[in-house]
Figure 1 (spheres, one colour):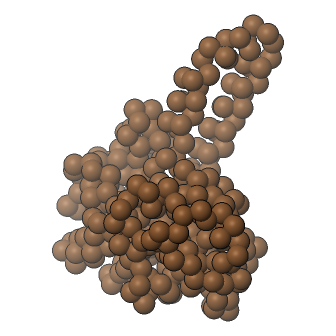
Figure 2 (cartoon, one colour; figure 1 turned 45 degrees about the vertical axis):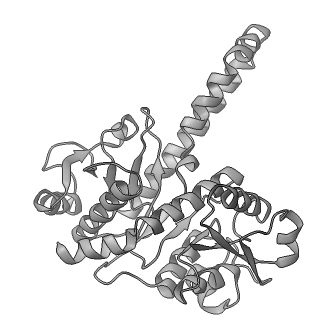
Figure 3 (cartoon, helix red, strand yellow; figure 1 turned 180 degrees about the vertical axis):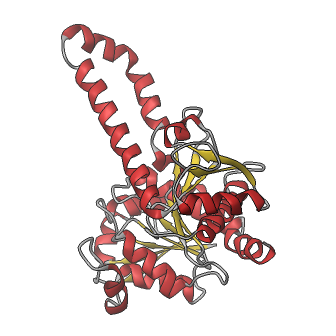
Length: 327
């Protein structure tokens, strides 16, 4: 299996990308990785080259670039060449921690959309208190959505949760302002009707405050709402840990207590770190496209590679295409 990776995308590129890649190569004997980026910079951090190929380019899509324009004009950008590796059949999946909008454009225009999918969706797996996690989609691929888009999101999320995350008969919830069937706006009310009639384990409306309690395995919403929920969860987690740290470092007594409970706090932090689940998958594309977090470290890149590999092995795009035809 071959996976192409944008070695120049993300806050800690290329070092974090290279280290995560080498860790993946060590753990998955069936894996070959193609790194796309500045060869000189890549080799600075590459200490093992077994089953790793480099495609050199010094052109990069930055966070300031307009996504669609950059993909169309920067033909030799690392992200564009990465996507071409998949489109032309040399790789079976691709990963980037770079510009999110550009990666979505590359996935859509270069790798290609699955026939029957109206709008691709971006979906990360987020942590829950019980440690199982839940899939949230869409978190920003499409700010505006129609009821049928949410139905397709539900099918894609359910397939991924079953085939990759190993959840039998995943519970699908529709994110709403209340649990009653008539709650919400026109979008959610019509989507509720479609989901009720669908061949899914639809459990009804779910509220945002219950997501991290594990109320569902797949939470479906539009990209505008999903992105705000994602960033609220991120911001809340960072703020809570900062407040706890400030309290524990406030005086000698609390510093002594902190020394005692530090291992438990580290475990808690790891439990709530969604990068442990991998990156955000771009569903509805003909091959797995994974968006790693911009601040991804070595471990996060490793998990993104593991996730992409699992999606290839489980034939997720094929299963999604089949489900859309059947429904």
